[in-house]
Length: 443
Image 1 (cartoon, helix red, strand yellow):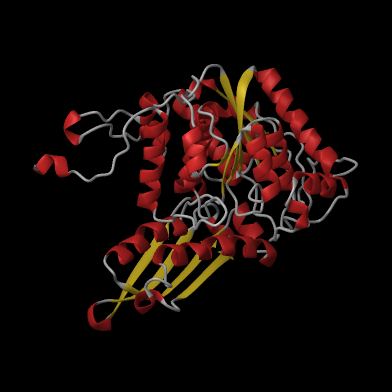
Image 2: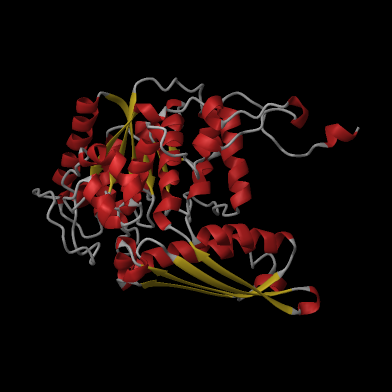
């Protein structure tokens, strides 16, 4: 979040009425998120992993004893007020998709089966050239050009809002990783972007059409994948013009999350790094998509940037110059959504003596991502009601490759990101920011 946006924040409007959460993609992440929200609403589960629902926030001095839950301190939408809308190129409803994803046990799905069956995906904007490994794409929009397809998405948004009675909306991209695209002249101005849509330019990927539609409809957009989606001048300028918050990109779930915990610890102790080798096996739809080299290139760019930004080898060349960083993702169907990540970290300490750290993280990708979808939706809706617009850097906590203002390096240190998030909430609610200085206790 830039200083200019911070200064322009206003007292947040209350969260009255229903909030529609739109997910392009109704696969493992989206169905795990939707099923989880419904189970929590029914009192069947606890929203573990969600800061918005379970975390506290300290206000004032430590001796004041003021540490309410974030959801009690900030005017967030209530879970009972959430409705869902989704698109997917595969026609399965949320129940069928959740069963096929294999993330949740049958005992967790069946009590809410009828609710899930009622969530049917709208036809998606989909082209196999951008996501080559999805072959069962029968629920797909057609139109005269990409501009027309974007207008169809806008109509879908309006229809869901009207039929559900929602007064506000948020869109969170939970679809697959698209092939790598570099920003070009088509992405520099909204006029060039709209012209490129009308000309069916290959540089305009489906996720960009969703981002455009969301911003045009005045609802925040969050990019949970590493795609070039809303992080280029045309859509960023449009977001400012329309007064819409945007954030991204790429949910920080497993291995990269661990890097943003471990790397700041190495740097804090001034321990050196010789190399960091990371490999993953993953068997869900995301793993299948990333088996395509063009899609993996998009993901790789997101994952590789983290260590360099945290460790600053240009500032600490004796510790981090020319460290080796290798990332691999292998599609392994038997593992399903239960991703396994191995990290071998070669570090050096006093007098240059070598040491190693080994991490074997057996995680559940969608279980980690689902509460992020909830938090991003609720916080983005809150930002919209607080008069925030454009890039929301304070939501970097949730992303592998956070968006920032031009010329700024993103902050990847998880603990700095958490401080930024909570201090932004304090600021918007008129509370003092916390510095952790604490000298007043020792006068």
